[in-house]
Image (cartoon, rainbow, N blue to C red; front, side, top):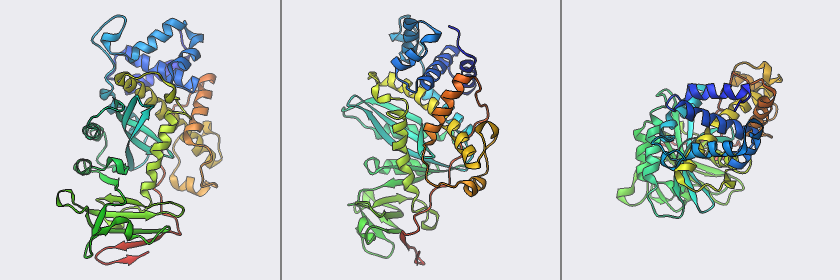
Length: 402
């Protein structure tokens, strides 16, 4: 099967980044990613259909299927299969090799495929989207201990993160756990974990009360140190951030180990990007919700395809978006511009087209016109400031209001 030059450029990039994989495994990953971008879908049938001009249907279908299989499940049985866990390190190194910032925001969350498969995921939050960098797939609706898998994923990720990066780890209230809090801190990172609104907090020098009672209502926020939770074994000393945004039915209640003056009141709003990242994996991007694959191990290998493709697409989208902000053609922009330059020239603060959609459009165009960009980057935006109308109360030894 003879493929276009662009495929071999992609294959060379994957061979350089994923040296732990065998050459045949690198080629299979490259073919999956190449076909997914061209088809704008990572579903097997869509990828095979898009690649039909390069090979025969049965051969392509079998090749792509067997790349996802355990060795013993293949037509020619063997003891070799793609080790997804061993690819988390190379994948994160790939992301960080493009990274232009000094801060990294991670989110822990789970997404499901119908009632069949659940994927516990650690993702990098980036410009209104998310890149999965580590995951564990399980059969859905079965009893099990999920936290042990999440803790293992964080440990695997930490090995590749440079100490110079400041890392925030966010999780929604359904994932709160003292073990998760401890693991994040032990790794040298900062938890930003959402609690239940009915949880209690005792500010320093005050009585214990419901956390949500610390704010007067919508349009208010409260930040202060104290002790969370009523019962002694569960108690955690930290900084509580309670934010009740205008138009919302209830406030965020966030616990972190950062000092009140060092935590951003609006930082937790970044967590919604992981939901948008799941949308990119599903309906608006790689169409994962259409898959009929239910074996957790095969799904996990398929997610490697989604993660590599998403990283590549977001890097393309970044270059295209930065070029538009500067008023130049993407082909003329050869390096990441300074954020100050972008901020000065960015006329529209609201993103009308997602970085993912922009990148998928440009990359699929480039793959059909044989002019791939070689200089790519991921330049994260500054973590957000709170709305100017939000009234913030700080509770510290020297209490101040803002």
